[in-house]
Length: 270
Image (cartoon, rainbow, N blue to C red; front, side, top):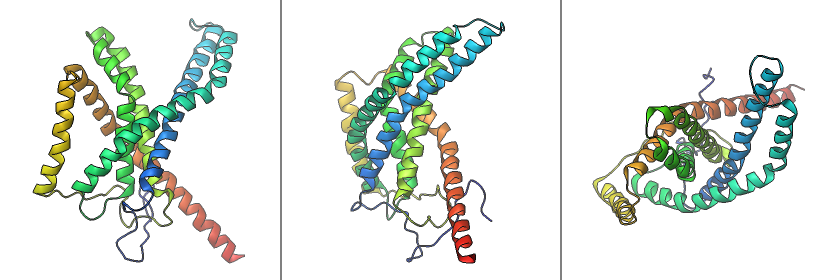
């Protein structure tokens, strides 16, 4: 029996699995749409968490266990946030979509040059979600890096990085789900395996756009320690959120597949 965090195994007609990236399909369009939807949900989720926290603090204040805003004012603020949710979703969707239009084509070029044979769609999707979320939340990272002048601002920096981590985790989940949205069978083997092999010419080909990007950042004075700190923080968040987001998607897909199989067995028995 498969582990809860490991997907059920199924074979493709070719025996090698159908969970691969093909330039001729609509995977990249689907990936961009799913990531943009996650970007639209991100501000709604953040404000929903804010509502829960402020409501809890207000209840504590009313019980005389602390200080906080009155519950009535908190509920009024929550109602205002809920009414503004469509606008928040629209802004997040548009901003993330614009970022995806710029970053996903670059990811497609890099994966085409670097990845031999096939690459698992869930891995490419999670990588794309991480990249888009990191770029979309780069202003938050830059704000944290600029204001982090002493250890007194550590709490603010940690809270800001939690925002970045939440966005990257949502992007990873959306990218992984985009990889399985149009597939009827699961990949044969572990869900997070994606062998990547580099040749000398492919590595040289990748250095060309990277060198051009670094030159552009240097000419525009964007290649600064502040930018480096923000990028490092985003990369650190992506590494931390990768395993739990992978487990979450695998666990959800396992439960969904088991329910479908149980329903089919029930129909056959009747």
